[in-house]
Amino acid sequence: MLHPDFPFSSQTDLSGIAFAAMRQMMLAQAKAANLAVLVDDETNLTMRAAHGLIGLRLEKQTDVIGLVAAQDERWLFVMKAAVADQMQSVMPAVAQAIKWSNGPVEGSLPLNFMFVEVRDVAQLGPDFIRVTLKGEDLSRYGDDAIHFRLVLPPVEGEARWPSVAANGSVIWPEGECALHKPVYTTRSVDHAANTLVTDIFIHDGGRTTVWAQDLLNGGRNRRVVGLTGPTGGGLMAADRVLVASDETGFPAAARILEALPKDATGDVFLEAESGAKCDYPIDVPQGVTVTWLARTDGDCLADATLAALPRHANSKIWFAGEREEARRLRDITKGFGRAAEDLRISGFWRK
Image (cartoon, rainbow, N blue to C red; front, side, top):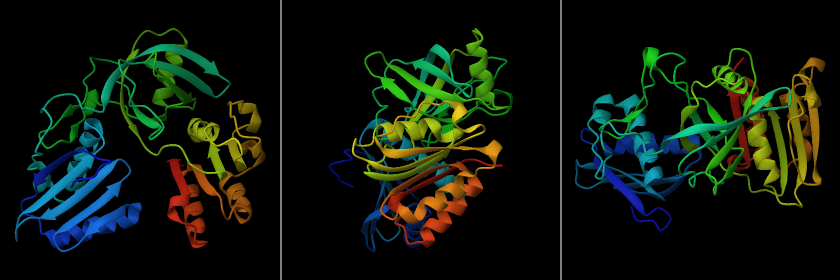
């Protein structure tokens, strides 16, 4: 599995697997996830994922080899863990037997995990708290993946952190020691200072909200937390856009919009409980129009996005909101024949 973009690679025997059956399963997953198939024949299958390659090779009549490749050791670790987790869901015995050619040290911290310390907390309008985190090396956090998992230990008791299993998967503490692992957006990074800024949406019952509010009020507990990542999609290369989001996606939308070219055009719909009174900072190019929607007035983000679709036949579409609304929008846009690569439609929460 040689590829100039992905110089780090690893392989494992997949004993007990039929190449033809595994090939069909992987091809179905590639179609569902819109992954590019680079090689597909009677003895080889190679697919390109967002941050690496996944492959399958038949060396002899019964010897099946699984392969992964990535641009660095951290992404290679992520690819290994993803393969082990996927195999665990369909063939647990095979997953437990995986032994990578350059496997991780069993019991060590995952390569995509790091400890960070809270350096600053500030109120950001009525609905957000801005948190600044400092780590030893945040060089991995760039524009190719703008999300991460914030790993919060339990409120009480000594924290237990994740470790690596022999097959490359990640073991997370369970029960009373379970960690809270929500996904957040890297709002900005200062690589010289090794600090990362993220914005926490304040909502009732949110465990991260409770953590951030405690810090805002001077609390000293849980100032050292974990990060895993980066993960998720990167910035959006486009000169015409239709962007729609409720509060859960405001930080990601803001990061994407401020990186658009200066001559970009399009529409942005932002839904908050009280509309523009949310006062979340959004900077857009001059040719992009921002419309605030208020749930208190009965506005609906998905309806506004669908109404704007006819004038955005050539735009890239980015949507973040309630899961069922995202599915409704996704089904309708695909029904219009829109290419999958032009759509980033995500359900960040469920009613």
